[in-house]
Amino acid sequence: MKNLIVILLFVVSPIIVKGDTVTLRDDSSINGAVRYYSGTFELKGEFKEGEKTVEKIYHLKREHVKAIRINDNRFNPGPPPAGIRQYETSSSLAIPEVKFDTKPEVKPETKKAASEGDSVKLKNNNDLKRGKLTSMDSDKITLENENPFNRDDVIYIRIGRP
Image (cartoon, rainbow, N blue to C red; front, side):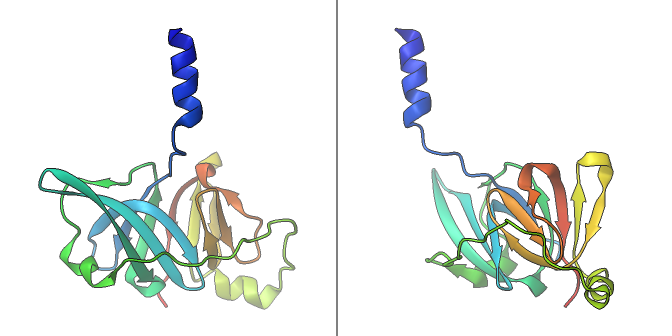
């Protein structure tokens, strides 16, 4: 009977959303589930407010983000940093589904320009991949001219200066 209850709880439990730690250009940080599309990061975080926990959504332009550490932390033990409060919204981004079937053609001039931008540090051999971040969701992280990386294979993302 106990096994049945455990299995039942597992089946009806909500899907666990992964979280990350976002560091802003002012070096403040915030935890939450992060997505990226078309130049904007969306962060959904949980914050302790008195005796309750509330969820807040922020939309950040890439020029405000310095780095993203991949982890499973969505909870913030206190209020959001003062600098991020201006980005709070009540709606989510409409992010289209991205197809990851083919590797895009690499053009030499694009590769050179991209090497000065963003970078992704991989767990495998501590590889550092450079290129412009094009999308990020709960499963995949994609740099321009690269196949998508599984989120679980990434340690962090550094966002280059605009």
